[in-house]
Length: 129
Image (tube, rainbow, N blue to C red):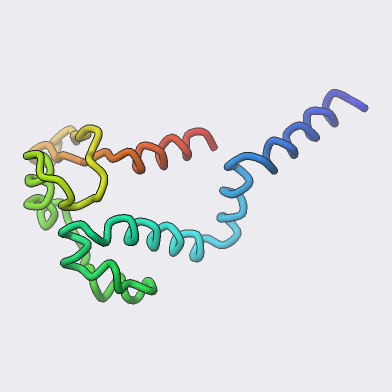
């Protein structure tokens, strides 16, 4: 057995037992994978003020989400984010933010982006894949 073949076999084993295999599976069904993620996020945040206002507990499809949650901009979310940055809990997310990332403010005032544990895990997951 050559070194190349051994390496390929090790890669196959690693892919089979890693998150990379799940990621690859999701690339073959992106719509379903995105719906799974949206359902997870809505379920996790249904008890927040934002989730209650927009009926997250009643969302059963992408069409339900679109009907319940109008398109958002930073300006429409700013009052909610201001409350979170002031320390209020359970407003936008059920998780307490670990920190607030800030934009550079090149097109206006700097914007504050809550960084939650689940967001950080998702971000790290993407890097590891």
